[in-house]
Structure formats: structure tokens, C-alpha cells
Image (cartoon, rainbow, N blue to C red):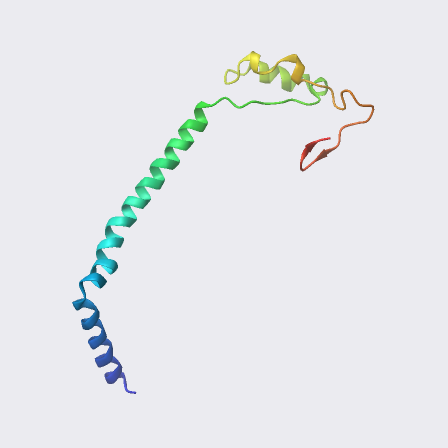
Length: 110
């Protein structure tokens, strides 16, 4: 097959597909309208989630608080977390209630 014959077949197929109204709508109109709407919708949703997450105060549990008094003092003095967020009950020494030291794994303190 020569390059000229390929060009003729390509042109014929292109003209046939452009005659079909549904093909034009699915190739041009839908992507031009749907993609911007989809991108704006996802961006708006992401912005709402981020702003909601920024407004929430994170709850922190401090294990082994006796080992790091400066860190606890800094957390209590923090303006973003009121002192009531860090009651004494949460500052447990490592291994509290047990006679063995803490081991930290990927699942948390044991």
C-alpha cells in the first residue's frame, strides 16, 4: 500500500466519522464541557476538605511524658491547642502499669 492510498482511506474514514452527529458530540462537546466541570468540582471539594481540616484541633496523646518535660511544656503553651487538650492522664510514663519498657511498632505503642 502506498502512502497516497493510506491518505485516501484516512480522509474517507475521517469524513465518515465527522458526518455522524453522535461522534462529533462525543469527541468535541463532551470533553470540552465535562472536563472543566470535573476539574472545578474536584478542586472545590479538595479546598473544602483542607479548610475543614485546618479548623479542627488535633488530639495528641503523649506517651512517656515524664521523659520529655520540655516537649510537654511546649505543647501546653501552644496557642493552637488549649491546655485542656493535654490532661495529666494522657502523659503516661513509658510502660505505665507494666514492668517492662515500651516497644514501638508500626501498630503503635505496646
